[in-house]
Image (cartoon, rainbow, N blue to C red; front, side):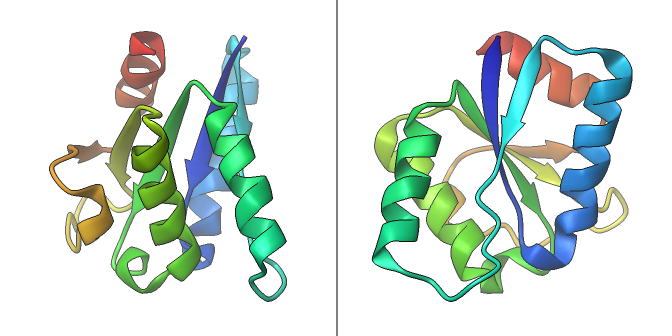
Length: 124
């Protein structure tokens, strides 16, 4: 079973929840992992998060106007790239593709559709 880390700004948690729910409805052969920050940042959180990212086959990064200011999501994106874990950005709002965080560099960002999600996961 493939493991996929989900990176998102906490303001976009609905996107993560919708994706996880949709995956359950589709009975997909993969599982999702995230490290939502619900408490102050700590060095131990970063260490645990890095280990989780390294243990995944890929990273889905939800991108919105909230992302560039989301310290945790930007750190997760940077960490995935540093660790060589495949990553793909997905616009949270199809009508508002904007604000790609610098941490993504040249990595592509595509519209969030179930087909695009499946294609990325199948490519891992």
